[in-house]
Image (cartoon, rainbow, N blue to C red):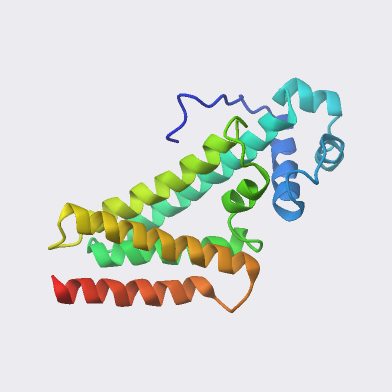
Length: 202
C-alpha cells in the first residue's frame, strides 16, 4: 500500500490471524469504538494477554483490520481488471462491477474505510493513513484509467478520474445506507453513459 513505508505492521501468527478475523467481523458489524479487546479475545478464543502480546494495542488491531481489508480488495480488483477487455471503457466498468460483487459478498454495511473514517478522523491515529491511503489509491486508479481514454488531454482525464471517483464513492455510501436498491448498478449505468458521451465528444 502507498503508506507502507510509514505504516507499522506485525507478523501474523495463527493466533493473531484468528484474532484479526474476529476483530474484522466485529469492527465491521458493530463499529470500532463499540468493540473492546475483551470481546475480540473471547470471539477469537484467545486470551487478552495473547492479543496484547501479538498486536501491542487495540490501535494496531484496527490498523491490521483495515490494511488487511484493503489488501484483499486490491487483489480482488486486480484479478477482475486483468480479466477485463483491454478497452478503457471496459476496464473502468470492470471497477464498478468488481465493487458491486465485493459489496454483495463483503459489504452489507457499506465501505469499511468510510465507516472507519466516521470514527477515526484524527490524522495522528495510525489507522488514518490506511483509510486515506486507500481512497487516494482509488482516485489514482480512476485517473490512470481515465488517461487511457482516447482523445482526452491530461486535464480532462484528471477531471474524468475525479468524477468516476465521486460516482463510485457515492454508490458505496448509498449501498451502506440502503436508501435505494442497487446503487452500484445505478452508478455503473451513469458511468457507462458518461463514457459514451466522452467518446462521442472526443
